[in-house]
Length: 126
Image 1 (tube, rainbow, N blue to C red):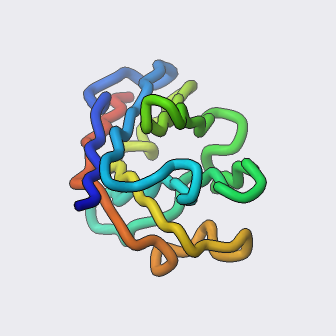
Image 2: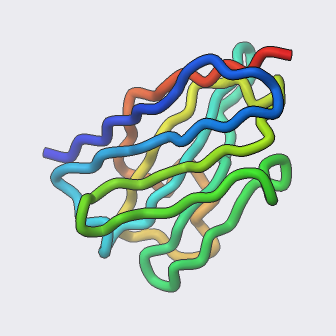
């Protein structure tokens, strides 16, 4: 049984930092692409960042490029999202996702991922 559990969300002032974690069980981080998505109130869920299991490449949404960093620890089966210089528009529920049969061109697509966490709330105050 696959389980993804996010943690690390919270309330932070604009310009601050947070580090999200996604603890994975029942899935291999070596064989799976991992990603973070987010959903702000009243908006659709959107891609934030991903890490390819094939190449290790890390695409980012333009809105977070240069501020967010995705990484993973295969031994601890945990994926991280370091978020710096946070803005109020980063406020959202952040979701971790995993998928084994994902090619490079699919990394940004929600439909490509098989497993999802319950999400963690990030709120950035101005």
